[in-house]
Image 1: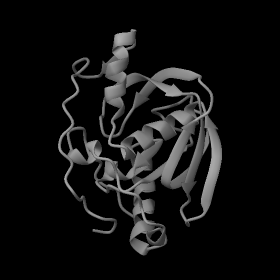
Image 2 (image 1 turned 120 degrees about the horizontal axis):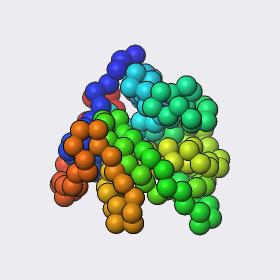
Image 3 (image 1 turned 120 degrees about the vertical axis):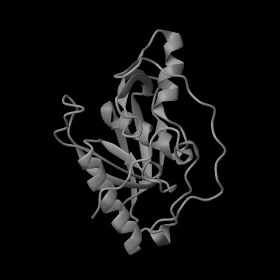
Image 4 (image 1 turned 90 degrees about the vertical axis):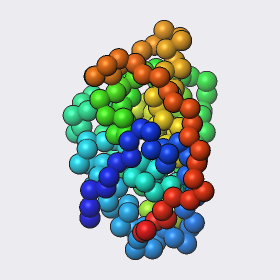
Length: 193
């Protein structure tokens, strides 16, 4: 296993929609190694979730889970989970505003509105179908990571929410502007490249 390089804001891989991971590639040694490396990378940086594009792999792959985490000390425990090609659907109309951070934007946290409850559909680490509800912080993590898969970064949502009286906090120099979406290259490295 290895600690992977985390893409930082400004890298085009974070602004491009990720490609689905074909079901037949899930069991491949390169994919399983990537999953292990993503889990190790998430733990190394005290993350609660990590998406393929954040480690320069433009595939619809997410790992997440919460145990004791110094970045989110009050977060409930959530088991380590691997999602391939996740789809999330809001359940109800309730939304919650709360602070978020991102491993791709160190030292920046912002208040982001998210759906309070979701229905999740995906394939698991071994290609098995998964379907389950998520709410609260669990739902927030999933929305944040699926945003990465869709080429969105939470900072944009946090900055848009400022117009509704919410805030973005930056440990260095205050709120920053959002750059225009850069052109997406046709291909990023495939799993195992």
